[in-house]
Each structure stands twice: as structure tokens, then as C-alpha cells.
Length: 452
Figure 1 (cartoon, rainbow, N blue to C red):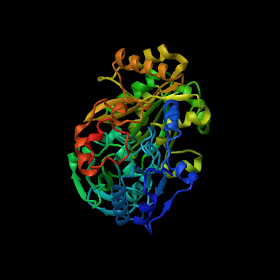
Figure 2: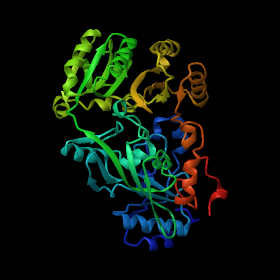
Figure 3: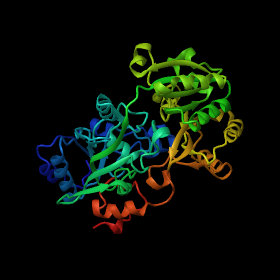
Figure 4: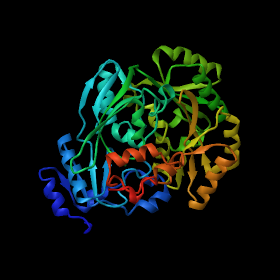
């Protein structure tokens, strides 16, 4: 353990709260899925914390926060550990606090749910489904990610086709934040104020609770549409979205991915491109008609409870960043990018890109909405050739094609997003983390002289 911190003093302050300090345990909890990026793998592989704490309730979190402030120890929060950019990797050592015991659903309201932040998304969504509601969106890691981790490290996912991105108005209504001070304080944020914390990588306050909007649940039909040509698959998904066919997911995956989707076998053959979808039951007849008119065929369609008995996983696990995971299970020589396309979307640009990069990039696109408008994203597989080649590619996609790259090969908030410092988040950090102890090194906006 690092000798620069008073660990005996810290441990005495948190007496009675579970903590772990074995090197094996601490090392395993110091990592997320940053290994998707060989660049981050090299930079973060040896970054580990000193101690893991596992609070079981809000009072214990307050005790830990007070001790952190008293002894000036770095603090990194961890949920399910499913992030891809090192969000929960402790760059400066210190304490890792696992939030998964704060997993209580506080209250279901008319069209929303208030919950503790450490709950698994699958548990929260399943509880909503029992009441006839569902979450507006979730990552493809629905089974293991926590809702607080999704808010702090994510931006959208399955359901963003229908309901926009996390930060869009109305999706998150309330946050309860705990400050890192000797006498921790509660700060409540409402509606637009949540932008002070959303996608801040847990750098500016401990998220204790949140309230999320819900929609009426549907027994979505998970299916795959096969088409002969990636341009046809893109145009099919775009048209389905523009025609407002009620879908929760439209994921376009090119045929070269079929070798990675081994469980699908003939359901995703190597001579067809696929659109993985979740379609509302009442819209499925119209959807089938549109598939036929588009020259496609449906290779499978099941409601969610029928998937596992038929040896299949949910459609959302064939989309978003699960495409990368499927490939890396087979071949670790790949990495990926996150691309936002200029509007209006031109599928011909994608076809030119496919021709330009050949076997170096396999393509996959997501239909979504952002700020009320249709937005097309790509999470292409990229052959890993090193840092220089990666940033040459990024430069070309941005300058030549007009795309925006959300860089998954960096661990700072700004460099992975819009390349600008969010000063609203920095100003809030001055209140919620006045000593600059939370997840240090993850934001360029915080300067040492800002700390008390």
C-alpha cells in the first residue's frame, strides 16, 4: 500500500465497514474493459488502487467520504466495472469504493422510478417490467452494469433509437449527490441540473440516488433481418426509423461479423448483412411487410422469454459495443472506434469508407436520436496497428468525412468526448469535491490550484 497516506488512521475511521486489501482483490477491482483498446491497455494495465471499500448503505458512504476528506486519499467509484475507457481505474491509487450494495428501489411513481445508484440495470428494469413499465434505455451490458455507472460513464444505448440520449431532457429527473468533505453534505439536482454530473466519470460527487423516467412496457420481439448488401441494410434501418416503426433497437451489422457471432450459425450467414431489431408486437406485421418490400428476410424472431430456450441471446447483445466484445472473444487483434455521422446521414459515405479501408475495418451502425433528431453512430472494428495509425485514421474520418470521433483510446473526459472542458462540471466539482480527491487525472478541467 502507498506509504503517502495514513492507512491506519483511515481504517480506524471506517471501523465496521467492509474493506479488502489483498493485492488480488484490489487489482481485479481496479480494472474495467479498457483492454478493448491496446493503447489504454498499455497505459492503464499497472494502475491499481490500495484499498477497496464496500459500503452497505448511505450512512457508511458518508463515513467513508468523511475519512477520505480527512486523510486526503484519492477516491474512485465503481459500479459493475463494464466501462470501456478506464472510468473506474484509479490513476493515483487510493481507495476504490464499490457501490453495488446501494441497490434499493426507493419508489415507483406514475411514470418514473427513484432508486439507489448501485442497483444493477437488469434488476431495476425487471422490477419496472413487473409493474408494466420499462427503462427508456440501457447499455448492451444491461445484465451487469449499474444505473449509477451508466449515468456517470455512459451516454446512450439500446432504446436511444426511441428515447434519445441520457442527457436529453426528461430522461433523468433527479440526482442525490454526496460531497467529499469532513462533514459530507447532500446536494440535490433536478432536471437540466443533472448535466453537472452526467458523464463526468464520477469526478464530482458521489451519486447516491436518481429518478428516471419510464415508459409503458412492451413485449419486444427480438429479430434479425438479412439483406444482400450493406447499403440496403443501412437504408432499411433508416427507412424503418423515418417511418416511425415502433422499434427499441435497430442495429446494422455487416456480414464479415458473422464469423464472430458463432451461436447464430445459419441465422447470420457470411453472405448476408444483418439488422438486429427489437420491434413492438403491434408493429410486427407492418415490420414484416416492410422487410418483404425491401427484399429482406427475417432469420429469427422471438419474444425475450423465448430466446434462451432457443439458444439465443437478446438482440441488444448483438449491438452497440457488444459487437466489439463478440469479435474480441474470437480475435484480440481488433479494437474499435466510436463515430457520429454528419447529418443528414448519407449511406454512400459508409460505402466509400468500406471500400477505402477494406479488411482493416468492419462496419456496424446504430440508429439513434440525439436532441430530438435522428443521429447515426458507428462502432466499427478496427485492426490494431498502433497509436500513430489509429490517430491518422481518426484524423482522416474527421477531416475528410466530416465525422465526429468519440475517442475510446483515452481516459480523460474531454478527449474522449467533445474535446472541450465542461466548466459547469468543474464548478460543481469545486462544491462536491473541494479537495479534488475524486477520480483524479480523469478531467483536464481540474487544476491543482483549485483544491482547498
